[in-house]
Length: 159
Image (cartoon, rainbow, N blue to C red; front, side, top):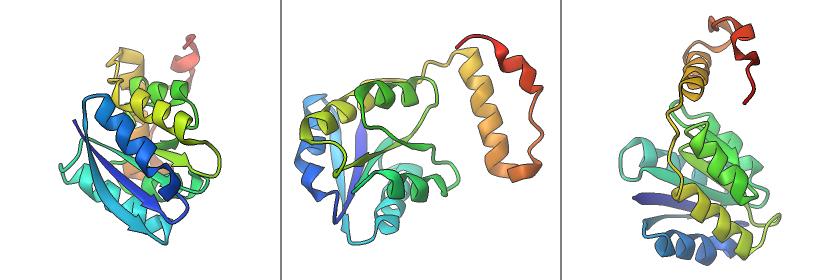
């Protein structure tokens, strides 16, 4: 799998760890570049993912928050901050996230590598409850506050 990777000025300290973890997991990192401003980083990686040049993306800034917010503004992108391997795997398995964001001022290289490996090493579960929930998210993305959600009480099951 090709994984688009982008770093802003504060995210550069994690580039070797992220790229190496992707390679070690048997995948191909595609370095999109480095920008001073995190919105440029997020946009470049999202273009690669949505354009088919990469299946997933990893964006890195100082906190992870800026690139996650910017990436999430792009229709078709599901991005989240992942500062532990559990979240990096869970966001893929349950939420079909196609981009994760890391914060170089929050985590170090070892945790960044573990997050990258967990993200690329996990597939979407395809379980009915996750597919249903993603449908609701897609309605929200396309219709905003006017999205007609299915009965929210249907989601009271565990999990």
